[in-house]
Every structure is written in structure tokens, then in C-alpha cells.
Image 1: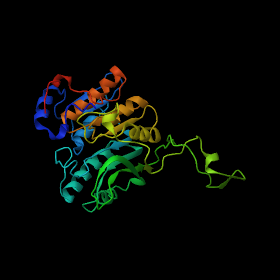
Image 2: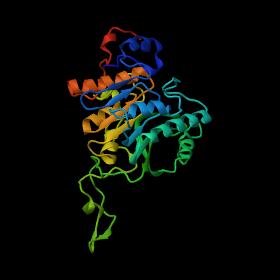
Image 3: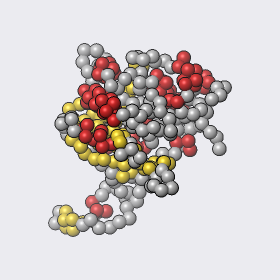
Image 4: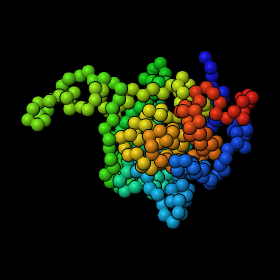
Length: 324
């Protein structure tokens, strides 16, 4: 079986040193897509001035606002046994301060009627942090209404012989105002009958009332797998990558073609790729120029080849002879 060309980009300083000369963005800079109007910034999600720069209108006299925000911040969990700048663990107070700053900045970029989705984890060995603290923090923003707590099942996880495997990530869904919501469907066929109710003077079942032969996704997503190295969408070195099908599900449900979508923790660029494929415009950033470059390259790779990732190929062919 082929293996990825290198390990985690966020935790290999020597590799990063070799990649940085090939990154077209330095801290504070923004790449503007000449074809569809996407933007990628090497910016800090916690700085209001960086968010304003990313969202500034082309005429530079006003600001653009997004109809959908999908954000995947660090979970405050030591991921894979490693602490790095991108996937760090700090004290609860520090993480809450960090979260308050970036959420405030993200809200400044949202339209008056918009959906906000936030990926988060829960460390079952540390009081399930940061999930409860973050949910309490979100109560500080009264303009947001909590809508759903979605669980995505991971293919792999962690645990011990004396505990249940931790194979989940959480997706918090909030609404500002009255954003659109379009019903979407999974590939899981309907098999159950029941859930009767009166409709038009006639008792009907849930099967009759549905618009498809498959079921709607609930708030537990078990039909989306996260085994990247076996899939075309894999981005080597991007340890916190999200499944493209999960992001596309959110975009289809909570935005319309032509809408503006924001993602202030780009990492592997999945939100940008989903927006490109579904006819939305994306404004995304990453504090690390390496991941900002990876995001731009993934879009260019999609347009050049039709492929959503590299699987086990090298996204940095300039370093084809590099040895970790």
C-alpha cells in the first residue's frame, strides 16, 4: 500500500522550513482567485482587523457579509499525542479567551440572516473539555439561536481496553436571524414504516411524506467516513482534515448558489473545495502560511485535474526528494 509522502505538516519543523519558500503568502497577505472570486488569507481568526481585511469589498469602501460560516478551530485537545501551534492544548481560561475572540470576529462577518457551524471535540479523559465550556461561552452572543448538536462518527478513535472508544466529533449549529434551510438526504434507504400523522384528512406515514427513497440526515452522521489516505480527497500532512461530504452537506442545507461562505480555519481547504463544487464563493484563512498555500494548491489541483485531493501523491512536488 502506498503511504503519504510525509507526516503531519504542523509538527515537522524541518519540513515546514523547506516548504515556506514555496508559499506565496506571508503573514497578513491575501490571495484573490481571479476566476470565481474566492479569497485565501494567511491571517489570524482572532484578530478583527484580519477578518475585516478578508471581507472587504472589491471597491474597498464597504464590507461583504457571509450567509454561512463553517469554522473548525483547534479543539484544545492534544491530537495524536502532539502539541503544536495548529493543534494545541492550553488551559481552559486561555482557550475560552481564544474562542471568544475568534467567535466575535466571525460574527462580524456574518449576515443578519445566516447560519453558523462550529466543529468541536470533547476529551473524555479531561472532563469532556472543551465542549461544555464552549457551549456556555456561546450564550454570551444572544443574537445566535442554538439549533442542533450534530455528531460525526470517525472511522478511528482513541480509548483503552477499559473504556469505550472515542470516535466522534461534534458540530454545533447556530442561527442568526432567519437563515434558509434546505432539506437534504443521505444515501441510506428508507426501511422503517410508522410515524403516522394526519395530513390532508388522511393518515400518512413518514415514508409517504418524504421526498426521496432515502432518509434525511439526523443529528448523528454515521454515513460519512473519515478514512482519508484511501480516498482521492486526502491531503497529505493535514491531520485535522474534514470529510468533503460533511462540508457539502452543510453547504447544501444552509446556503444557496451564489452565497458567500466563510471558514477562518482553512487547514486542508475543504470548505473552499466544497464551495467551488457547489457554486458558492468562499472567504477562508489560516494563521499558518503553509496551510494557506495548501488550500490554494488544492483549488488549483481540482481545476487542473478534477481531483479533490492528492491521496498519497505529494502536494509539494518541489520537495519530491525530501526525506522526513
